[in-house]
Image (tube, rainbow, N blue to C red; front, side, top):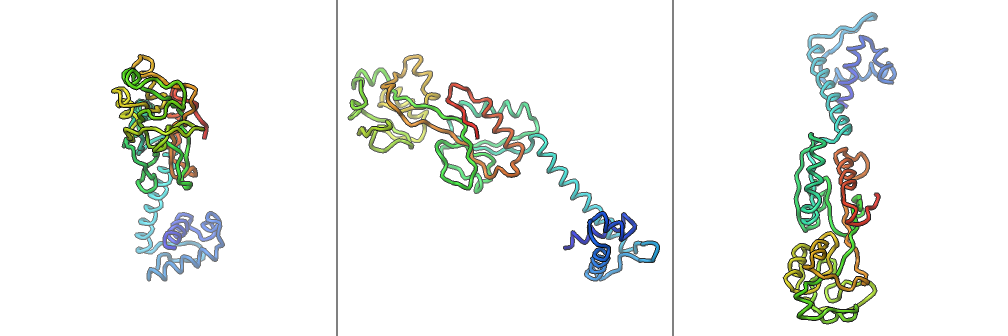
Length: 296
């Protein structure tokens, strides 16, 4: 009520007329007059001396007008600043992401984005934990797997296939399985999305000998390279090791669940320009060989 009355008072003073102020505000003249009277009553002072021909500010009214005018200017400047933020990406961008995604892709892409939009600053946390963007005031939380919280907007960034891999030393010692059934009894390195007692092969229930469970795919790859066991790795993590022979792909006909990566953010309505622009930029820069890129 106070801010509205201050706006009405300011318009009356600047228009030098209750009638003109009412027209500009889309109000009845009687309503404007009543609101000014109530404002004076609430403040306990007379702000305007009225005659049939003109309005004249009292000394107190002049001081009140100058303060109100500055408030209105500040308010208009604040609105302009907010709208300006939506014209081009700017401000602090807070992102969380899985460690490997951050190391392999996000660092390079974010650097390119910040070079293109120098008014962007960023804070990034690389982590294996699930992050709630609302609770932790994060603009974008990137995570592996289908999100469970339906109150968040989830945009699929990529989908990467997986391959069963083992080192030549492991296969020399334990043998090379030729069929899915022959996986039974082999030593398994499992990731969080894998069943705890079975090989992660869709349509099959082949028991495994779990020798290592971890929540980091780079760690799992390194353990497999050292001969600890067989692991189902995303293509983006094992491609180089397969190409140079440090890992061997097993049973390419086996169907493993894909690894999907999602970007989570609180709302699509009135989405900040910095968030929309970065997500579009990120998807445009994701290498095609990682997997099919999915539209929102």
